[in-house]
Length: 112
Length: 119
Image (cartoon, rainbow over all chains, first blue to last red; front, top):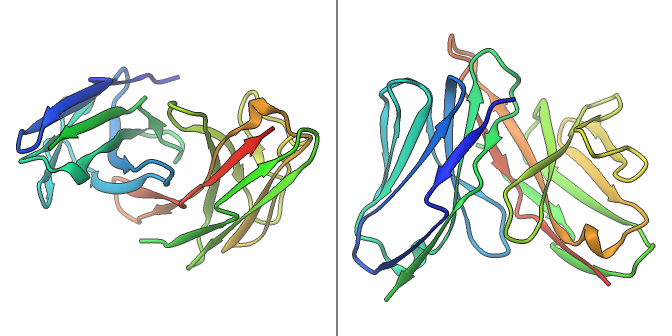
């Protein structure tokens, strides 16, 4: 099956810094989804991407669907303490089932 | 979008007992799933809950251990049977919304999760 590599595994940053994380796939995806999970909660959808090259923002978050259709990145600008959590990418293979593959997550810690 | 609620939000159970988790969606959805998330891990799909027929289980998960019901398009239950400490996890209900487009664009939403601790 397809593999999804998410990096980095964890990040420790100072408040105000920008953050970048990415996911790469061994297969061509036609959908990329980015989620944030707070401790003890379910994942919350942040951004959905459907076209190669697509760049979408949600407040201080920006995500892009890679041109090769095998990667995506998520940027967070001017981080704040409430950005703390685990960020997951998920992708759905072109022509495959509707069940996406999830990355292993990026744990973000923001120091005030 | 879809709003998903789960009950209970958390529970502490004794070894050998069973717990049924309920999932309610605010709109009719075709595709509903159950995931497990063990501490510090990513999301693992348990099964697809099919309305009116038996659930489709992923490798490593069986109906006797995780029976699932899906009586209609807005509700599903997952039972964790004969529990052991290894079943301590967050159990998540999820739905997929399939958009009609050439790309087959879709999104997937999750419930708040049920945090299960087995002693």
